[in-house]
Every structure is written in C-alpha cells, then in structure tokens.
Length: 377
Image (cartoon, rainbow, N blue to C red):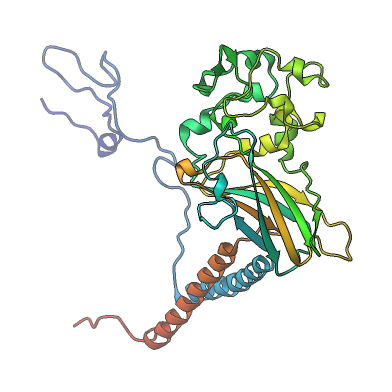
C-alpha cells in the first residue's frame, strides 16, 4: 500500500494521513492511536541554537594593545606591592630547641603535663626599629590542622553556648568527647591540642630588663568573639557553676573557666582559644598571639637594641618533628609581609610586555606579505 505525504509533513515528523498496519486501523492523526513521537527539539531560540552570540576576531590591532596595556598596568602595581611588602619589619626566632646550643634544648622533650613547666630565655637584637603597631605571632611547622578528621573534631553548638550540647557533646568529638564519664568542655581534637606556650618580651638596657606590654585582647575576629563563641547561658560571673558537670580536655593543665582572670576573656570566649580554633590551611602557619601598641608618635614601638624572650615551654612538638617560632611584625595596607603577590604581578606584566614586543616584531616583518594562493585560470 502506497503512502503519500508532503515534504513539510515529513520534516515535522508526522504526516497528516494515516499509515496502514496489518490487522489494524490507521496510525496517525486520523487513527485511534496516539500521535507519533518525535525527537525534534522545540522550536525555540535556545534549543535550536539561534541565540545571539559574539565571537572576537583576534587581529594584531586588538591583541598587541591588550598585551602592552596589561604589561604597563601590572608592572607598576607589582613594583608598588613589592616595595610595600619589603618596608614591613619582621623578626623571627625559632625556639624549638633542636640545636644543642639552643637555650631551649633542655625543654625539647617536654610533655603536656610537665610540672613545673620548663622555661628558657633567648636574647636577640633588633637592628632596626619597629615604628608602627607590632603584632606578635607564634608559628608552628609540620602541624596539619587541615586533616579532615581533625577539622571535624569539634562541636560548634557547644562552643556557641548551647547548654544541652555542653553536657552531651557531638559524636564528632570522639575520642575527646568524654573523660572519666564526664563530658569534655570544649570537646574535640582541635581544642585538646591548643597551643599553650607563654611568651614574655623584655627590653634590655644597661643590664636592666624592662617588660614590654603585650595586649591579649583584640586578637580574634569580631564575628568569632561575638557570634560563634559564647559561654553557656546563666550567671556569667560564675563560670565555675556554668561548667559544672564537665571536665577539662585531656591535655589541658586547667579547665576552660580558668583560662583568664578577666570574665570577658574567659571560658569559650577566651581570645587565645578562639584564635586557635580557627584552623590553618597549610602545615606551616602562624597565629596572632599578642599586640604591642605604639604609645606615642615621637618614639617607635620597639626601638633598635637588645631584647630577651622568656618562654614557658609547655607545647611539645619534637614527637612529630615540628618547629616553633615567635614572629614580630608590622603591617601595611596590604597586610603582613608577602613578597609573592608583588613578584607575581611583575612576572605576569613582564611576560605580557615581552610577548607584545615579540608579536609586534613578527607582525611588522610578516604581516604585510600576501599569503593568498595563486589560483590558475
């Protein structure tokens, strides 16, 4: 049986007439069955790929100016950032004590529960004065705070002051969730490994040691101090009662409500604790420890001269081949000392400018040639 239908109907995927099938009626618009299925996409601009598009045509007139402009912009920016970074004063002391001649070598094998704590003193000299406010950091190396199980080992509800989580911490804190059948506050591996060395700075002038005032407040992020970390609800002046029924982390020498004598810097809102709980992304990192504010504009914050660093060596790092550092640093509008950003800008700008010169030479030498092929008659 012959079937005739128009070309348009064939393109649409459904002829107007029916198609005979053996033993049955016609299939199609006139038959009793459903419409013929088609894979043809809907007639829309998106599905038929008729959306407007713009494709740049790369020519010497567009590419060469782009290379030169990028180079001329990036190189001065990189030089400015690099010079700014180099103007930042920074002094670093490694007090791990692995060297036999180090004053802290006697404390190398200290443990968490060493009583009394091992102390050592390191004398050093600042060749240049630190003019603006000085930030004191402690630095650790080969300490992987970015380990997945370590990062998860905390209870944010407990740290936010939730009373039910205080007595029933999250299972993510295991194996530092409970101790001696009491819930640990704060629980987890991050809190359990909190840095607890004590650093004190002195200026030496004519054999007289003058202590440098170290400010312990204002070192944590405002959102951490006021939003993420809160003490349990209740009488804020009696933290001992608020934390009743809990126990200290295994490696801590004292409970969380004895971290500081000032109520607004004690418990979960202690700023040293808050700074430590913000985990680092790399195994070598530094965290803010103290601030040294400039007293007046007539004298630098730290004058050039002799200083001594007194260390209560409580934090063991020798077991995992770690290292400990104390860093004194000023800052600028771009933050701390970081020459990489300036070098990156200078490198990218120089490469673009060099490529622009090379392409300009190539275009000048070969651009005017007639590259069309001769077509024989």
